[in-house]
Length: 168
Image (cartoon, rainbow, N blue to C red; front, side, top):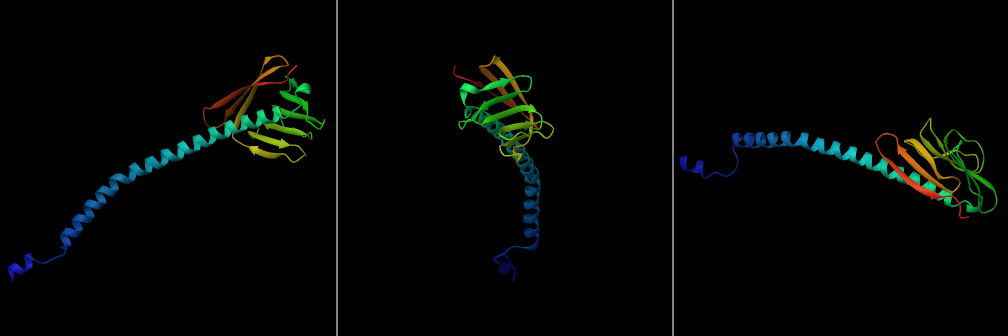
């Protein structure tokens, strides 16, 4: 009988308990590491999302300004507003002052109190993007060259571009 016990196949209860204990120790060690990596990934993903959308906002502002008739484009520095005509001859605005704009034919405007870039072409006030801390406009060459800087809200990030207003 003693020899047959040594040749039996399978695990004893103690071996199963030790294996589960070893597995539990390894799992408990790796769970906090996995959670910290997941947290880091989520934070990085949020940061990249904000950076990407801040670039999108700047590109959209550029696009709307470039769609205007360059011969009639005028920057009004005290209002931080670009006034122009579209190609059908209607007067249009790009307002970066931070105030709510109710005028129709406003291609877009920045509303500072909510941090939103909005479109108001036909009185709809559609929100294009949120999480904008500020938009700074600097007139580099009066009446000809603007520098526009979009500053993100929740992270330390901004993007800048320079736009030529007219081709006189």
